[in-house]
Image (tube, rainbow, N blue to C red; front, side):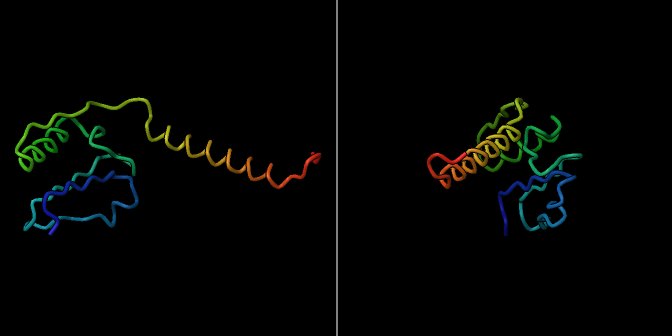
Length: 104
């Protein structure tokens, strides 16, 4: 079971300890990014490992697969900041709703 699945883990992610280890009866691929964390993506792997991932996908899909290149700009950080700002705004709104007019 578990055919045509790429399991991507970061070496330093505590969840990787309980990660899937595909058996020889599947064609699944397990990739562990050395020094990687929970948000490890294909773009975080070395060019050699990325090539292995793309070659695997090409074999499964029977089509050419190209990478997007190294993503920059801290997408994971932006998501966390967006969540934090949203939480602050919701908390502020709820606090203001409970105040009666004229209260400081």
